[in-house]
Image (cartoon, rainbow, N blue to C red; front, top):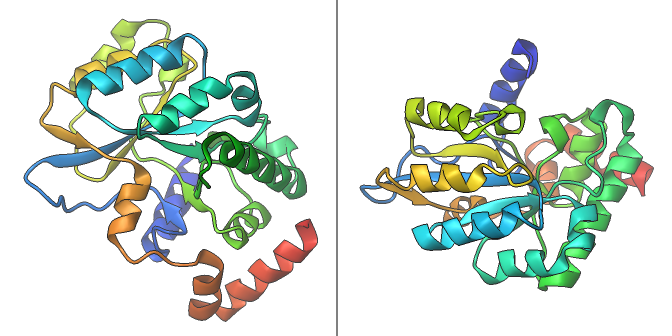
Length: 245
């Protein structure tokens, strides 16, 4: 992420409610334990996701899985297992297409298609949406808010997708100093996420889903709240929805 994008992300995160945009969770823990959220992108994977789920179960930890629609179609039983074991499932579009080459209309169609697939498989709606590479345009952002989607980003990223072996990840984990509210970005299509879980459970941490943090505050209807708090943005949101239907 460029320095400019990082700056804009920080500015918007500070200005907007977390039900619209999450870059980290609450910094004050509800207990003496620090709380972090482990998030896993790009699955489910037929080999690596089961191993990761086993590691989470052994640790008594919950995570948030941002699944790709095409992968849910290929591995529906894994999606059901993720939900049945108490983890949260978020939306990561249908194809994980390159953001710069994907129009707002196509992006939002993929979000809707994936959301419906998740609901069909699990019986639950999903409100968390993570755009591929964290990249959004104004049109995509307003379209997500109109659809009551919380944009879920992250603040701790080991870039595990680019690592070639476990040693690199272990080196990052050894240097990582958890802070309450951290959202850690990992991936369950490479084979190393389970290693991260096993190492992180050595800390005195509580692992939560993203919605658990949101549920502690007053949930809001994103589109209605947007209209109430900022009529200009609310009007843009309504106009964008009309354009992309």
